[in-house]
Amino acid sequence: MLDDESKNCIPGQLPTFGYTAGGYAGSVAYQTGMDLIHDVFGNPLDAGLFKCDPYKPECVCQQQVFGRVAKLTLAMGKVWLKCKKPGLAGKTPFTLPITSSAELAECIHNLGSINSVTADTTGTIADATTQLGEAITNFCGGPFTGPNDPFGGGVCAGLTFPTLGDCLARQAKCRFCKMENDIDGITVDCGLFAGTTALACQ
Image (tube, rainbow, N blue to C red):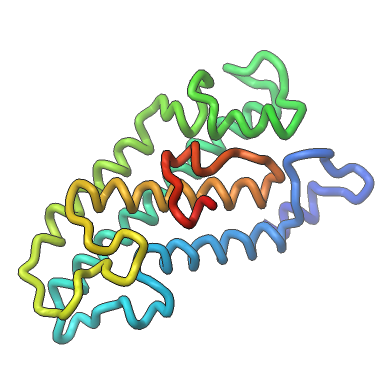
């Protein structure tokens, strides 16, 4: 990422919107990952994680579900880039290039834009969300031997399928939205985007 920035982002010729320094973007992305882990398992993290010995059912549940939460976040990123890149270049289906932060933000929140994250025209995000629900069903049914549920330290504590899947998906959407707001200098209402008033979106 930093190599691409040094080659293509020339001082004095930088974009007037949709750009922040690569180092900053990297730090925001890293922090977003950590924040999402804390959303799911709690903070401090160690208190919410189960060791596979002796708590194998809880451990496998946590591993499988967070893997799907991460894939959901990646799916949103893929859809976002498929809208952002051609949009900035004015390529199909865009007839004119994106020329402002407000227009760029529509690649996330505009349901009417066929390429936006919210529209999810290809079903990429829907598929990842379904896989999250399947992981909860397949790996988190217990019986558990630990004193707490696998997500008892996080913001979705005490929930079961399908409510647990909905809650985790909302947290992933919250964190993704806030990350792109910071990295791309846009102002999407992340609570509205994710359909939640959860702490991560406040």
